Length: 490
Image (cartoon, rainbow, N blue to C red):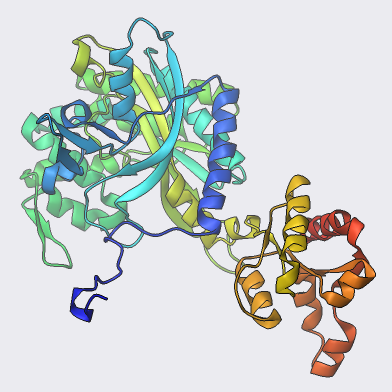
């Protein structure tokens, strides 16, 4: 027996949350609905390993001040450094570069799984989270980017969001390049400036201005060095990100004077004009996709149009629309595959932030209503366990999730267990029921509703709400009836 001093403290590492019961169940269902949309649009699945060689992943994360530059890395026994993937896009680029002659061009793939980032954890900011991506590799031009915007909207609707509850905000890195060129912002300052603008929603204009200038100290006391821009350069960028609102066409007209002096700026305007035309032809209005100059995306590898999905809550009665922030994003990355092959391979993609989307849906009391635990067969008599296992097996054979209570507690504790498991019903067979060839099926959800109107224990025991005694042979049909009623009442 180890001493108390030797015992480890049970604790999860910061930023790595435990997820139990309804969370992984709801996540699997959510990914399934999104994946069905991806496959209907012609994307095929691909699974890549959790680890990639660190040089293959590249250094594109904004957290360059973190150990291993934002990734979790280890050295293999052959001396090579491996790192947990920080997204699903960099592994795709490696896969395409490794299999150039066997893949169709364009190559359309979707993927889902956990990713890891060695960044500072905080509220709603985890080091491990789940993404579900779709990418097209080998398709140049803004038409493929417009398709990504339309695909993302279809995926969110499949996830259960009504049209207008999620907005795709679209920008292009070329416009940003254009305004920086016009303002004299050099290459060494641009990446820092981009990452500063990407924090606008979180820090506000004042916080971004500090990051564009000398730097900013956060609430914890940590200081982030800024881009070192002049006041005139800062104001030019602030005017650029302020050009938002109105129609997509109006936004383009307002941007032209700021960026048209550079070739990159003119190319950016042309890209967005094509995207606007295609979205219009698909019937996607301003309430579902708009041009927004504040969208930058923090990853360094983007080269053209970038997108961000913002979840917008339905108006509360007498209140304002609640905003939940970004639940996904993506964009064009034409140079990512070329790191391996030395040739430009155009690519664009979109990533649904499954973990964050699920958290937002749970906040709105949607995902939790979908999850349902198994039917629990109570263990009333320990010498009758074989019969209880037979009941659970019959239910499972009929496609109904079921389990036998395997603890050592009495009926009251077993009912509490079933409630904590989210069981829709319990099956009860004591010695008396067994002798008569019957079982009792108790509808837990209905019982809870009926119990609210019964104030006395005696009345409760006499009425036995939502309990139905049926023939043992009718067990499956009785449970199906309970489940059907629960689904209608959900």
